[in-house]
Image 1 (cartoon, rainbow, N blue to C red):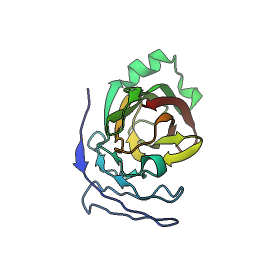
Image 2 (image 1 turned 180 degrees about the vertical axis):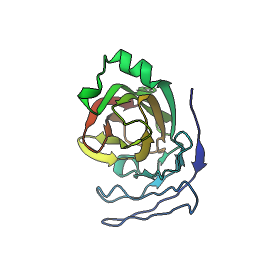
Image 3 (image 1 turned 30 degrees about the horizontal axis):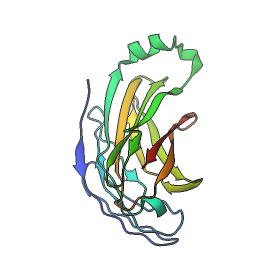
Length: 204
């Protein structure tokens, strides 16, 4: 099982129509910008990962607004769940099919929380069709909605080889979070293909 986590904390404050950015001038760089939806102030804390030792640049991007303003996005982490061979067998994949991105499942745990609690936004997805010796640049997007409005959109850009991956981003709810149902649309987006699935959680 491959896992590598390099943590960096970035605090972001943003206003209507403006966004802030902070970066780490090292091999792996992190950045944070406002989601640009509505008027609010939010904070984002991200963790950056290496990808099989590759020197790629990855950034956690996004913010929390409105009903989630004052909350925080925590450390991003992932595991490789299956190898290229195991994933190809599971999907009966043939190289002639080209690039495949398939989300297998998404969840928010726990599904019922209280203001101040931490929930984990998890997804598991497969990537196939990456040429040997190369990596595919993809973006993981988690779009959080409340009453039809977007109140958060954390994103992370990563590089992947063929395989099945599980990733997670924790969300600490603000102490004054509004009660009700929140939907989370999770998307894995590549240069030419993408896949999305939706889940939800409840704040009581």
